[in-house]
Structure formats: C-alpha cells, structure tokens
Amino acid sequence: MPVWDDLVGQERLSAQLDAAARDADAIVTAAAAGAPPPEVSKMTHAWLFTGPPGAGHLTAARAFAAALQCVSPDRALGGAPGCGFCDGCHTTLVGTHADVTTVAAVGSQILVDAMRDTVRKSFTSPANGRWQVILVQDAERLNEKSANAVLKAVEEPAPRTVWLLCAPSLDDVLPTIRSRCRHVSLLTPSVEAVADMLVRREGIEPDAALAAARATQGHIDQARRLATDPRARERRAAVLRLPLRVEDVGGCLKAAQELVDAATEESKQLAEEIDTKETEELKAALGAAQGGRMPRGTAGVMKELEDKQKRRRTRAQRDSLDLALTDLTGFYRDVLALQLGSHVALANTEVQDTLERLARGTTPESTLRRIDAIAACRAALDRNVAPLLAVEAMTMALRAG
Image 1 (cartoon, helix red, strand yellow):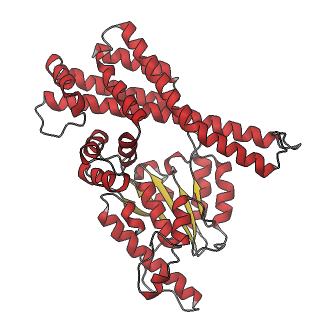
Image 2 (cartoon, helix red, strand yellow):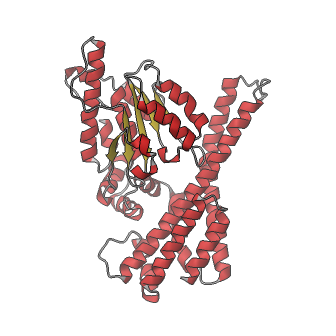
Image 3 (cartoon, rainbow, N blue to C red):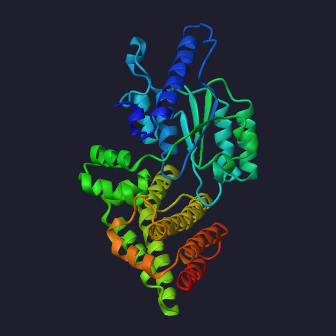
C-alpha cells in the first residue's frame, strides 16, 4: 500500500508531500538522463515537520523519505513514488536504508558529537539510493552546538541531500534553521480516524478502538499501545485512580512513590530489550571472543555505550512519567468540562462516575489549580528536578486544590 496510508487524518499533507516526491523523482530521472532539472519544482532541500504530540510528524517524515527512495518500476509508467513495497520504500520504513540516516536524542539533548558524522555524511552523494536523507527526530532537543552544525549543513547542502526535521512546533527550532526549511504542519487526527486505523491495521474491535482513540485524544501511538497492551491499560487505570487517593498527606506521598516506581519499571521494561540487542551487536562488531571476553582497547567503546543507554533510560522514565501526567491532566479537564456544562466529549468515560462526583464536590477554580499543579510538575521534570520530589509536590497540591 502507498506510504501515505500511514498518515492518519492528514489528507492535505499527504497530497503536498506526494507532489514534492513526484518532483523529486523528476529531478533524479532528469539527472540520470543528462537532462536539465525541471524549472519549477515543489521539492526543496530541507523540511520541518511540526504538529501536536501523537499527530505523526515522524511517521510523515519517514513516509516522505520512503517516497524519495522509491524504486518501483511503476514510476516509469506514470505511477507515483512511495509504493510501500519496493526495496527503497521497505528499507527506509524499517530503518535499514544506507542513504537514510536517523538522529534521535538519547538523553535530554542531541549533542554535537552525535551530529558530526551525520553532517559529514550529508555532504556526500547517495551510496545506492536516489537521495541522501537526514532525518532528525527530535529537532527541539538540538543544543546550541549541534544546532549550529545542522545550520551550516542546511545553508549549503549537497545537491542530492534532503534534511527532514521533526519538532512539536516552529518555536522549538532555532529561527535560523526554520527559516531555511519548508514548514509542513500536521493536525491532530480525529478520534474517528484513529479508531478506524486501529480497526484496519491492528484488528481491534470497533468499540475498544473507539475507547482507546477517545482516551488518548487523537495520539496515534498511545492509542495503539492502549488498544494492544494490557499493561498500558493497567497503568492508565492506576493513574485515573490517583485523584481519589490524595485525601491526606500519607496518601499523597504513597501515590507519588507508586507513580514514580511505575514509570521506572515501565521504562526499564522498554529499555531492556533495546539495550541487550544493542550491546550484543556492538560486542560482535568489536570481535568479542567466545564467552563474552572483549579484545583489548574496547573498554572505552563499551563504556560509551553504557553511558548512552543510561541517559536513554533516564529519558524513558521521564517520558513515561510525562505520559501519566498527560492522562491526569485529561482527567481534570473532563472534571472541568462537567463543572462548566461544556458539551465537549469526555475522554475518560470509563470513570465517569468519579468525574461527576468530583465535579459536584469541587469548584472550577480548584480544578484549574490542580491542572496548574500538574503543569508545574511537568515543568520541574524538564528542569531535571528529581522525579519523586516533583511528583510529591504535585500530589500535595492536588490534595490542597
């Protein structure tokens, strides 16, 4: 199926990227024939994908990268690039294409050391693909030095190099970088579009798909995980019970500890499989002997990998906590909607009795203060405040209202 089918509720964007991919194909085809490039083209060397969390800006960027590398023979017959099944599309989508480099933050930042080799590669011609594609997943996490390295590469790119940057919003990217990119913005997909995707792609029952889509308010990845992973549903159910457990100081402190412990355990589970595979692959590449004994001079490389994995686990724990706080914000948003008599659809219908009870027993002002307390906790975590201290302060504020 075409790569654009992975973009949920983004029909306008799909059409825009499809047109650019067709022009990109025409540029490469003309160069191969020794002909001049088209005079007018919708293709450019740098793109900035933004959109609300979960809208799929990384999916859109990867789909575009696949269309750029598409080698389907149907193109010669007037077909659009981005078939989804040729070698170029497939290897790009699974992350193994030699001419598609993906850069992601390991910790809280993308360091300049992680960008140097990538920037050097961006000035080379494609090895066997049609374009040299550099995909930066977390452009908002570029620090000053790494952002400057990207800026230099984006200012004067190689003729067949394309930069695809992903960030939540324009304001999250250095102005000098975003001014050199073509901006494409994704919309939050509708609950119905996400539910339809879960039914078609994951085989989820329609009612369960609609419940997961409504609970995550259009966040595609979270909806998929909620619909397919019982542990995710259990975690979310525990978070939605928290507002009833902060009636005294002891309850606040216990709820905070359990929330942090759950985030730690979840991030550990997610990281273990990745870390084990990564470590074994590096050992094999370095020539580990039978029994795991490493050659001399490789201790520094292994230590560097361990440090990278530690930073990634720390970020994964904070991301897991942030997801719980997002669910908690959604809970109080529903309470506020009931208090104000709003007709917006509730996200947490499975706990509607609790929502209605809190709505009757508290005021809109106190609900807003609780939402502010959650936002303050998220801000504290961004400043690297110890997670337990930040969450304890939040649960105490939730009690006070």
